[in-house]
Amino acid sequence: MLEYVPDSLKTSEFYLAAVKQNAVLLKFVPFTIRTPELCLAAVMEDGFALKYVPKPYKTSELCLTALQQNGKAFRYVPKKLRKKLCFNSIS
Image (cartoon, rainbow, N blue to C red; front, side):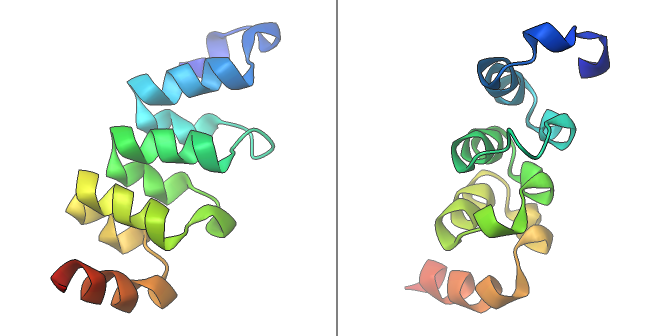
């Protein structure tokens, strides 16, 4: 896992490549490196990565991307966005 990688190699680019290969690795990415772009890459790989996305980054668009990848990620969508996402997907 990532704990075996030397800290000197753990750059933003490294983490981006990691989550593109295995989105669940997002849970090991330091919060200071979790950007909206990195989180988007993770949920595009696996919608369940939404679980590890910081709340401020859980926008309608990001959550919709996660749901399109894996509908079971709905449990990680903030409650305030659920109704909106459900109605938007019907129209």
